[in-house]
Amino acid sequence: MIAWRQWRCSAGKARRTSHVSYTSGHWQLFEPAGKDMGWGDLVFVNSTTKHFICVQVDCLGMGDPKKLQQDSEHMGRELFSLLTYIGYEPEWVRCTTWRDASPRERPVLPQGLLGKQQGPGFTQIDASSFKPVLLPAALDRIEEIVARDSGVQKSVNKHSMCVWRASSKIHSTMRCHQGNALQHLCTFGHSQCRAPRCAACFGAIGLSGVGVQAPQRCSACKAVHYCNRDCQLADWSSHKAFCKQHRVKA
Image (cartoon, rainbow, N blue to C red; front, side):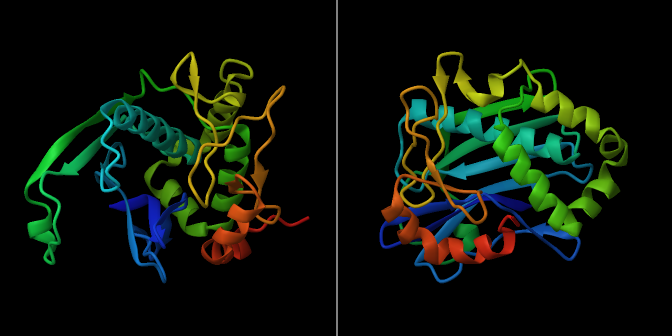
C-alpha cells in the first residue's frame, strides 16, 4: 500500500504534494507533518506489481459526478504513466472515488471504513488503452528524483528487471508519443486539456502558449508551479523540506 498523492490541509487550504515515500524496502504512507489534517489517495498493489487499485475519498465535498469521473480518469492515466516510465510493467490500474454516506467523526479506523458508498468516479486503464499523459518537464523531474533515491531503483530492479533493461525504449516511446502531443497533455478528451495546478491554492494555471502567460515555477527544485508570488510565499513552509532535498544543481 502506498500513498501516491498526499493532500495536506492548513488554515482551510488544501495543498498537494506529488512524491511518494519509500523506505526499508517497502512503500509506505507519507505522513503529513505539522498540519491540522492530512489525507491522500491510497494505492493498493499486488505482489507481482502488475495490478494497482487507487482509492480517492471525496472528503472535500466536491461531489460533481462529471468532475469526479474526470479526476478518476486522469489519476489512472498519471499513475499508469509514472509506473511505466520508472520501469514497472502494470497490466491495469483501477481508480475509484468513495464518498461517506453520513459524514461524522469516527475515532476507530475499522468503523470509519463502514457505511461507505461507491462514488460515480471509476475508471480502469490497461496496457491496451494506455496513452502517455505526462509532460516532458514531468518526465525530467521523475528521472532526477528516481536517480537520487536508490530505494526506488532497487525496487524496480527486483520486480521488473526485464522492463528496466528495456527502459531506453520505454522512455523513447513515452517522450515521442504522437509527436508533440505531450506538450498539451490532453487527458479527458481531444478538446479538453489539463493545466498545471498551483501548489498553494490548487487552482488551475493556464497552459503556456501564444497569448497565455506561463505559470511560475519554483526556481530551486523546478517541481511545483504557482499562480503568483503570494501563493509561492504562502506555500514555502510546506514546500521547504522537499525543495531543499530535490533542488536542481546549476
